[in-house]
Image 1 (cartoon, rainbow, N blue to C red):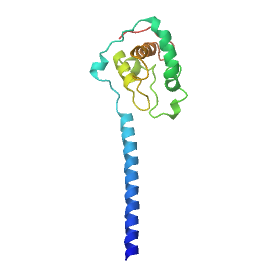
Image 2 (cartoon, helix red, strand yellow):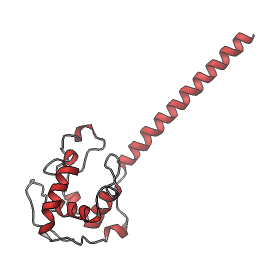
Image 3 (cartoon, rainbow, N blue to C red):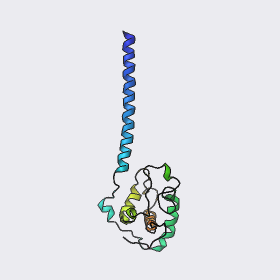
Image 4 (cartoon, rainbow, N blue to C red):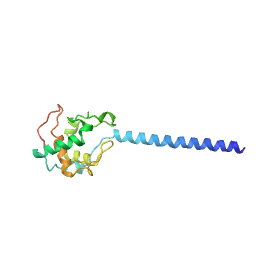
Length: 154
């Protein structure tokens, strides 16, 4: 009797452990999948923030360097989302040359760059405000063809 009771307890523990592992796996997959399929929208207050360096061509040199170091590994040298690290990432990096990105406000891009969203890190503790605005200014020079476009101020 005691041996059967011990076996039942072991079976119960194994089933419980399997259930817990399955629950954790489901939660991890579901929450990651859900986050990746929800639109990434900056708060209205962030969308309305203006780039203090918009139209300042002097910031482009620093923005170009910052982009090469911090963004190109994932977003690619031309901003198309095809950097060497892009293949391993889910979701895939944004195409900075796309109308979707180019039509966002500077404030929205600044907020996203600052806050991050998996797998993109939050840069607010890595880069200064000025550096993040320099990156936004550089991103504004990218066009769908991969060539630079006229610097926009929005």
